[in-house]
Image (cartoon, rainbow, N blue to C red):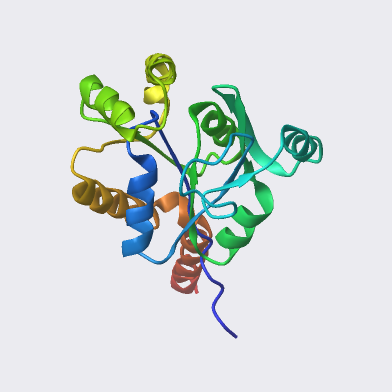
Length: 215
């Protein structure tokens, strides 16, 4: 009989817009094949180069609200005028197959996931400083000055919740940050909380030696 595969980790990654979360995750998955990215649904329009089903599931507001009503989402949140949410079925399927599933989601959604999946690993990605964040947002060239300012104001608000995450990664050198994230997640597979059944079974088996001594 084949040994049952260990259930994968649910990994929640958040951070300010412009902190480099997407690039970090793509490079992690390129280097290490066991990771799977949970594709979020959103009502925002695709950016240049983005593909439906790969970067996001781009849906109408009516369809998104239908997904909410039918409990098809693990979490959802509104951010800068658009909905974002995590479809449930794909996540559960990948976890059961033993893959570590990454959710790249906004802080509002992450805090909801924490209530439902307290065993998940919560990582916050930050830039080395505020000036760097502003430069990255401006350098993307995809948004107006007003939109960049809105994202910086949002980052100021979001900074209040950084301490609600278990781990912080400062994304200064991409390659180093990728390796730090992989090492962090790899270590989680050895946490005692994930092996309670084994420790209880081993403890029960060892207790028989007390019984043998009494004979």
